[in-house]
Length: 189
Image 1 (tube, helix red, strand yellow):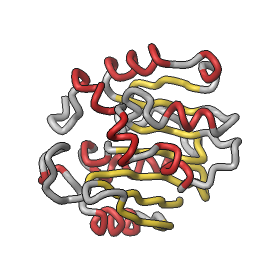
Image 2: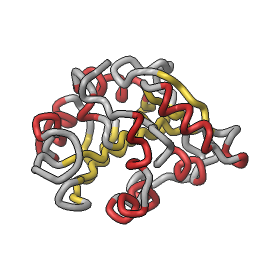
Image 3: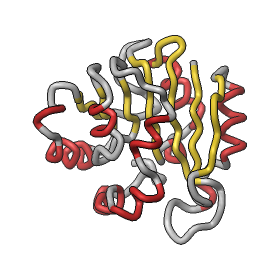
């Protein structure tokens, strides 16, 4: 197992009122400019922090991808009846997404890219599964010391992330801080 990966035993930390204040999923999803018919991939879906709000915004399918079966079991146990037909759970790695080319219109990768090794392989996979003109929302830890979160050497500074994305042929549409610890980047294929 990747030593950067989040410990499933700490899943309660992923969805709590304090985190929702700092990283409101609805406001972050607004950055994708969804129209209501997109197929969406949530990479590192965890317990569904973005999966469920995304499913409320589209008539398309939301694919919840996570490498850890414990995370997906937790997500499945929380799946509301009204979205159960529109959420498809997929176990797999970001570095080898088990999905055909050009399958989705949007990708959400929240607090997961710092775990992907190598990062460029995960980004190539995101590019592969995105349809032309598709958008992705990256939410990550800024490379600063904080009381919680991954070690500093696992974090990717927002300027570095934007440079990597552009170097891989993505168009960076926006980059903004959410707190001193978190940032978002929206990019397009």
